[in-house]
Amino acid sequence: MESPTVCVIIAARNAEATIGRAVGSALREARVSEVVVVDDESSDATCERSLAADDGSGRLAIVRLDRNQGPAHARNRAIAGTKAPLIAILDADDFYLRGRFDTLLDGEDWDFVADNIVFIDERIASHAEPAVPRFEAAPRFLDMAGFVEGNISRRGASRGEIGFLKPVMRRAFLDRHGLRYDEGLRLGEDYDLYARALLKGARYKIVHGCGYGAVVRANSLSGRHRTQDLKRLYEADRAMLASGEVPPQAKAVLRRHESHVRARYELRHFLDRKAEAGFIRAGFGALMRPAALPAIACGIGADKLEAFRNKRGAKAEPGPMPPRYLLAARVGAQK
Image 1 (cartoon, rainbow, N blue to C red):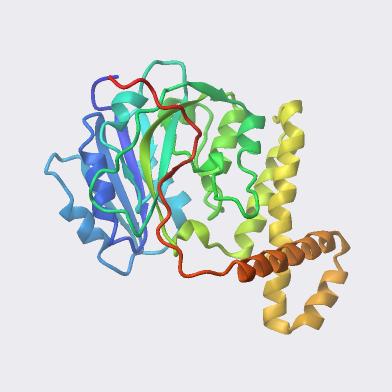
Image 2: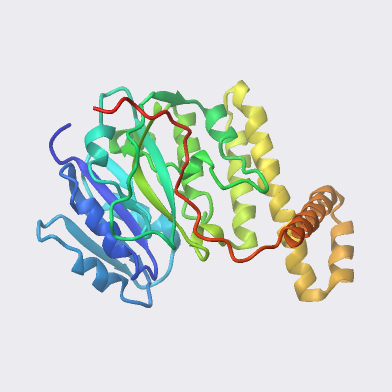
């Protein structure tokens, strides 16, 4: 495992401001044999900035798409065109901490292995390496129920779904089970792939040391999505439930995740209809779908309450948030 065996895949669209750091952080890792940037029809200098970060080692490849097809297609395209036995995903505005793979790729007891993520406010993010504590590894394995439970978001809480983890994946496992990203999804495509892998028996290992830096941006693509994207995501849950592969202990939590995403869809669908046709027509349409009414009413009520609380607690523009970690972890003994 000490030889270069990792293919890093970066799907990028209009990421000229951040792609250089992402590419550089991947190329500096000795265990990386391939770095593939898939430029998903950018209109800026994403491609040029990627090439400018090349270290001349011959490991960087750029694939330019002439039509925007989303991150799932971009990643599948890169997987198809590479050979390294291990596959790692890196978002275009994120970066690896130095030495990530030296500590992460330990042992043979996993098909997917992920480490902790440090979230950094874009207002304090810089090209300097963030100071991250040396956390105890405390390895553990995720099962289907625990993974899905960890992907149900809570209103008002900082986003911290387990689906944010960026595991290294064994190509052999993906190939053996015919697993690739669902190109019909533009939201939750990572969650869907990992869940389907767990249904096929993937050994998903988590260690608590931190090797991945995620920059939190107000205009991040992961924070924006279309109403239809939510519909496709809960339909993906339904497809898994209908497959007959979901273990009994995971069915209830998967149904809860499907209900959670569907409720978000029903609210967004109602608000879209209201913006297009007015409240009366939107309300009439909702009445024709009585099963959607609880989600709409609860969603509107929660939005109003959150707006009221924000108004009461309105203060001056808050400063940058301090770094936070996706996984709670204990700092290890200092050497």
